[in-house]
Length: 393
Image (cartoon, rainbow, N blue to C red; front, side):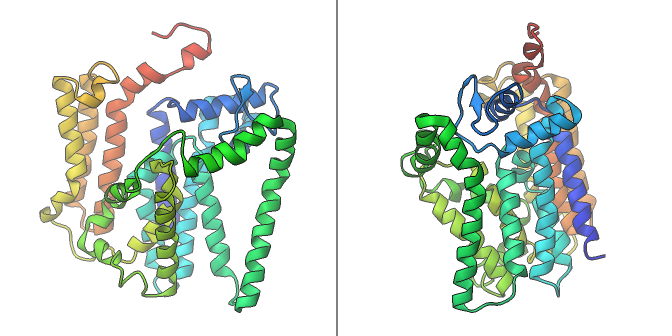
């Protein structure tokens, strides 16, 4: 019974991610680039040194490309199958977040399902967790490390230091199994690209994605919506509450250390904080509202209302963001997206369980947004016809 809510949230995210994948094509530049790198590996490129358009591609490690090729070896080359690999890790992360909550607070089993549901309904997690990117894989590795850390027996300072050194040694060996041969086979270009330009360069003086130090602080309100916008949710994030018990301290140090460290790094992207979203879900799971829901809480639906207003504005004429992409969206897609968002608002007001009511909002936001944008995205970014040698419509 303790794990049933966790499994339900996991299933919900998996189905939602599948829906979002079907509502959009492979998106440039990340998804198209990563699948292209996997394709070049498939057609005879080096299995250790990724290539893109025939040139060495040292921006990312090859694990995602290996896994895509493993799937292709089982089911044949298919873009949809490739797009399931990274979201599979995101789906597993939901389950691991719930399991970690059960281990951190065994006397409060409800927090397992709550943490899993909060992560499932995070708009940032829904967006990036359903895309072909590396961040969900890194999140899965982080969660496995946290589960192992909490499962280990208490040790003294000396034994703890030895255990940490052993863990780092194992990690370095695992990386070295592919990195050392790749550095040898890739030549001077790859040796400069991977450890220096792509690692040190992005940290000290990024050649791409350079953002101000306050970038992640500005994103936090969006990252904690909607659960963190409630009074109990904000109370769970108060400094005095963050040191209440060992489990809360672990999650607080996890997310605070990453946000501070990443804020000092030159290159920043919203999805870089994906491995910290489980920690945020763990913290918020301790402050879910317990009272009944009512219309006075409608202000929490402001982002969804904003989506509806933006859709109406786009129907009358392109708003600035959409004007850069092309023509206004078709009326039918706007209507369908607006209907989906309104349905989410209605569910928000009708559902009595606060957690379920809050979960209706981000789901309506993401599905409605994808329904509204899908015709434009497929018209502008679908490379299927081009890949088959036909002229795009």
